[in-house]
Figure 1 (spheres, rainbow, N blue to C red):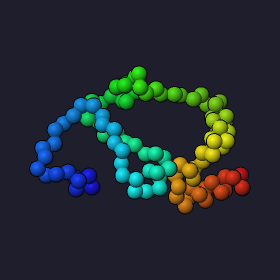
Figure 2: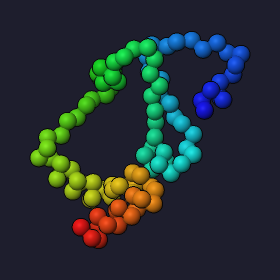
Figure 3: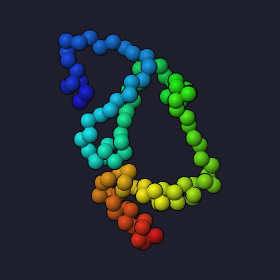
Figure 4: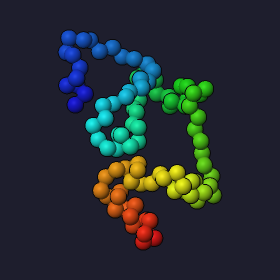
Length: 99
């Protein structure tokens, strides 16, 4: 638990804005996805609302999904590269060779 890493002698203060965290890479999924996290403070706005010049939301129309999937195939991005666990390896094999 995160509380195990907090020094009990330090008083924890509330913060407003989100904090970006670079976690210890202890599993394959974090490594594969380049996992970063945000710990949000008291502000209840999304990141794209808090930093509109930094983050942009992109909405794909439904008719673009087929082409996006083709791009992922060409770029070598698949379920197993994103989720490197046995179940996704099996699903990727099925998708590649049996669909």
